[in-house]
Image (cartoon, rainbow, N blue to C red; front, side, top):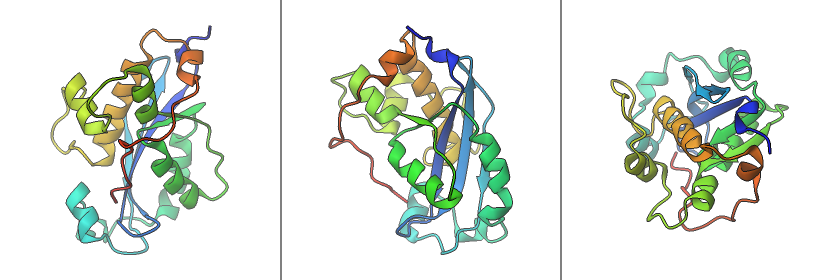
Length: 192
């Protein structure tokens, strides 16, 4: 059995502009190395199309806030550096991975651990597996304040990192890789 801490991880969260397909507005990456959660990196970027009112209600980012932000190309090298890990972690990962693949073109996504699917499989019987519900139930937001708020990339990436570490616990890497269950009614839609 392999210790899960033998891999390096990066936890990501993206916030989008509400268009279809969604364009990136905010991105955060949090490393986990040797089982220890590191400091987050985050970027606000100017999307190609404006942020919709619906997306603004979700994450609170206004068009005025990104009007002078760099376009993604200016931060792409820093983002790629932050994503350099053995595995990527996200909650409802297909959404974040999809946005990253569209923005990064030939980027090769590493192995992915989806905390939504992991939580369903490893802690069955919960009333909800939405990130906000798990954060509240497991008290994963303690110590976060200031600009850190739900549905902002840094907050969501930090609490997702904490959720992953909580779920990984004393489990082996093989246990975490075990076949996840399929999608379900608690999948979180792309709310941006």
